[in-house]
Length: 543
Image (cartoon, rainbow, N blue to C red; front, side, top):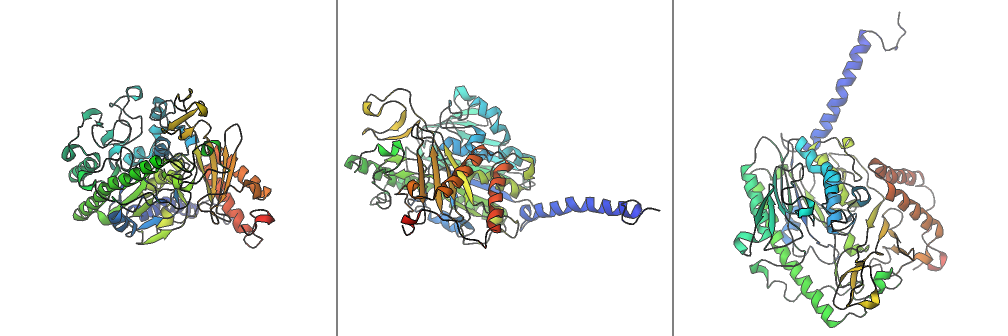
């Protein structure tokens, strides 16, 4: 006679069989909670990705309809960041859910792996649209993809990344007129007619045509990537006189010297010249003007979904690839820097299970977009190699359980030219993105990695790969504009902790990126009853 509880016999086999059936049933039920929220069908998904739209300097001001139709109708993330503040590596992070050190796109050049053959054979072949197709999503892309996309050295226009049913991608960097598209692998040239060629409107019109022709039996995913507000800042004709009295904001770090900052920030002339101020004010106005057409796009798209009876079953994400600056620390215009104005991005989401008018504090990264989108689709995230994590639990806790990460990595590889600029001989070689008055926005030694923390301390710790081994540390609570580098005032124990976190994050891959932060979360809970760690030395305790 078998011993009681030995696991043998028909009763035990039935119990085992029942348990085997229960596990997949529970997993399917959890999956359906996101995919089927408010509908009998899996949810549709739309991702709208702008180019260089800041959130710190008023970049969302022109987006009145968008803030109402997406932000007020869902969740606005107040602490959304890019993993790297430059177009091509950032977009590569969005597509793969990976930090730059894991997708190896360093900058906007082919030599920096932007849309290179190496990228196509590796990370691009594991980008999230491929997995959406496996979930039977109908996929559509229109607009800017990657800065070097469509170049002859990168497969020409015939290269269509895997996972896309409909492909309308811009060749090269952002333009509004006189550009070339790859339309499902075939070249399509455009001129300067507003009605036929204005890229933001063309993206909208083709997305509407896709929605009209879609198969009603399967969900859809649209990724719309307009050029706004990237240069050359060409607004639609009807908007070219808007914001005529607007100037770039003069508060915070505007026109301030880069004191106690890395080499590149110590070079700009301060105060800025009147010509530089006029130039950046003009750029600031034109950026806003281009965004009005994007605001119109969102309005038209939402109305279309409503008329199709699809709005309540569609997640709409609105975000940008990186932030921007106009005069901060006397840098005229660009991105690429470690400061909040360049690494913070707008992020709003509406959709099934997301309560309206939420303002969420939990920090999220653009590497989290891919796993979040796949989570919504019902794909098993354990099957993908992504550094990011789904933030569905943050905006729809009724659908998912989860915790926010306490800190994260921001990394960037500086870009320069091997020869010195003849117009700026005093600066020497190794710089790029230089303006006529010899203010350069990038350099080889503008290579850094930062830890940004939100729990225990609102802190940023950055190390540079330069000849000075420069370090910058900022307390964002007392110094939100990052005017004072407090490296020499911080408790050495805290510096050591931040350094160790940085080392681990820079080598993390996939789930280990989650494990680093989750271990800290558990440790923090264990110490909840103890003393809060000291942030800086006693002589600055009241700083």
